[in-house]
Image (cartoon, rainbow, N blue to C red; front, side, top):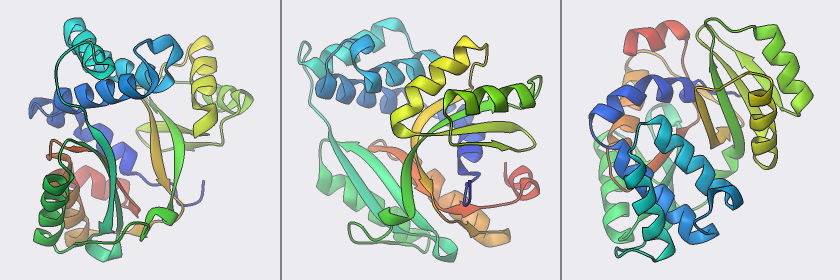
Length: 248
C-alpha cells in the first residue's frame, strides 16, 4: 500500500512501556464502556465491543474489570459517560497528527492536547485540516519470526485483505474497515493469530523523518498518549528500521 506507515509497528513496541505506566487499563475501560453504550453489552452482537474486550484480555485485564466497564456503558452501573472526540494538528517536519479521544470534559481535553502540541513545536488545527490524509482501515499485525510469510500472504489475499506489508519484524495485513472482522476470522481459522488487531486511521501519504525530527515526533506521540483522555494517536510519518531500533 502506498504510504503505509510504520507507526503501527512503533506503537506495538511501545505497548509494554505503556502498560507499565498504568495507562492502558484506563483507556481500555473507557473504550469498552463507550462501545457498550453505543452498541449494547453483548460482544457477539457488537463488533466494536468485541474488539475492545479482545484488547483488554490481551492486556491481561481481569474479567471483573471488563464486566464492570460493560455495565457502566450500558447504564447498569454508576459512573459518567464518555464522548468521542477527534483533534487534528501538526507536528515536527509538517507531520499530520490525528488524535482520537474519549472524554467527559472536552474543554479539559482540548486544552491538554493543545498544550502538548505547542510544547513540542506543533500546533492544534481546525477540524478537517488533516483528516483527508487518513483513511479508516483494519490492521492485523503478525510477528515475523516463525511464520510462513508466503502462506500468510496467500491466506490474507484469499480472505479479501487489501494488502500485506512485510518488514523485518512484522507482517501487517491491511483491510477495509468493513471487512476487518471477516478477514480476521478467516486468518484465525487458517491458524494465523495476530499480535495486534485494530481498526485504525491509515495515512494515504507519509513524511519521512530522521534524526532530531524523528525524536521530536516520537516525543509528541508519547506525550499525547500519556493523556488519559487520548485513545489513539495517528501520524503520517515514516522512519527507517535502523532509526526505529535506535529510538526504541
